[in-house]
Length: 473
Ligand code: CS2
Image (cartoon, rainbow, N blue to C red; front, side):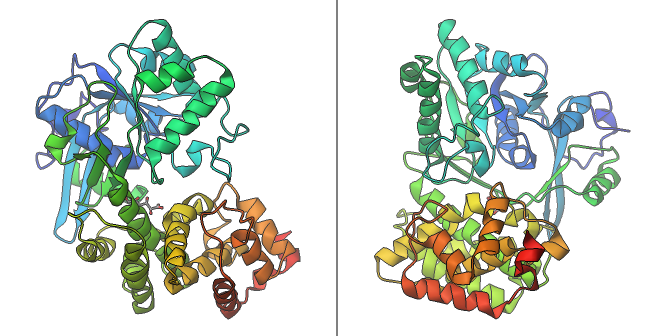
């Protein structure tokens, strides 16, 4: 039997369930990108806020293109289970915050109507780094920001709100980008100005785009996970999500209108998220990407295996403590040594099968804020970052196709362009094109001669049989 409002009485008694009445509650949030991460993070916070009595914050989920999540959740009335896994055991909770899931490409008008509803106060999004449609110089890439992009739907929704004399919205970015709210505000404004819609000024005056730091490790759910959930809860749940016990959400307290009382369920509302976001991107995500590229080529599949490898452990220890943590000024209440210890413990969670290949995707979108920002900061202070340089070399090998035989083609929106680099250049040429004066990633770091030499030396330790032009063409 499948999970739904009707089958709920059959859900195993050990599953924690929210005590609030779902019926009659308005949807106050429209969320774009309702993948596993949102369901384990923002939806979980919102569910618990509603349990404490907050009303009318149900979530309308939106997938921009894929109908997969709609097919998982709509037949289940939006219900799904969230299982926290650790060596202490599993803890499963039913999440009831999601009302419905719309597929924007199939039902664009419904998405715009949801945004234009007087009950909606927040449009949030986890559209991944590439969903922001940025060109290498950080400006809006108009070829990408077309009618299928988040900008299009938000612009239409905002236009209707404006025309109806309604309030603006809080547009809440929950992706792993530096200054995610600030970047989004700039890109959205650029989009509106390009449309010549006259909405730009209204957007600036009536909407707000707080920055947030979001953190929870959420591996992609597998069929084996779903079978385990069915065995443990007694119901089939096609929308089941697995995660770790830890979660953190730091939000810049700058909302255009009402918001859920997320601080009552553990979110931190602050005036400046920068130190939290920087620590998270450079230490957690920076170490994650290093484990991914170095770990895959050393034969590991999961994060917990890679972090147990003494060679890799030493590299990410150094990357986090001596390179990333030294590259920015922490807030007084942050202890980066303790933070690094906690990250290592989280990575080692043996119950969470977090695949390295999941982290390895979209490197071109992740590397700038995870590694290059640290490299630039340390370079300005006259220091070098050998751990990150090793990781960069591993990423270049990954782009060359070194892991492709086992893990398939490189999954990155710029995969073809970056693979062509290897077809046309030797190692030094690739390093120069990526990290020289006109670096393909658009900065913020230009490699010094010694750094280029070190990356090249690391590349030559792993001569690839797949680097032959014929094999790549
Ligand atoms: C990971 C993140 O896939 C990745 O790139 O580094 O998704 C990471 O698990 C989350 O940011 C943790 O909060």
